[in-house]
Length: 288
Image (cartoon, rainbow, N blue to C red; front, side, top):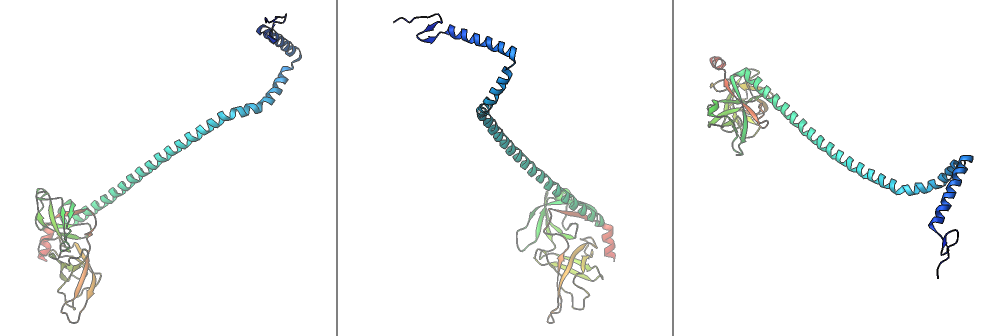
């Protein structure tokens, strides 16, 4: 059946598009006139805004939550990156500080070495240790100086605190030094307190030397400093060698048992000093 179109434009019982347009235009015109004459629309809009605000808040929650979550994750990642950067920077700073402290300690050792050498030698050369003997029956070290540096057999080796030993093998680039604690090493000394002459022999222990052939009547005490006498023309006179730490008197023995601790730090550091003793001082000590 064909639908009947009335004067209002209804088609099949529903308003046509033209009818809806006419109604909307009429309502808009009425609202504009009403607003112009009565100024009521702002109040209506305010009331509607108040009623709609909760809906707006609820509708905005997903967006706000997404923004908050994004900021949270970004902030956490940023904090982790900053913490990692600060941790790396702290480790680098600590490494630089430790290196600086090591360099300062090394500079102090070198200054002490050179200051000590000036007292007993015309010339001195700092030599780095390249090897320490692992043989339990010998006490020797290898230094990074040889014939090309003027090193010679019997040359004294010292540090800032005392006599270390002497050169016993010379190569082109390296040399071997026998320490004063080696069982085969001996050095003439005097007691600094009274001038008593004695000989210090290596014991084989890493930090002990022996002083044999002194009778109970000898004027020597624990704590006495033993210095090189210069006899034999090998070691500079008056340089520290060892300090007496124990004296034992056995009534059945003719000699005292005396042990001393080397003043040189034989088990520390990585440099020693090779010296060319002052010949005038050596000659003077021998004349005495």
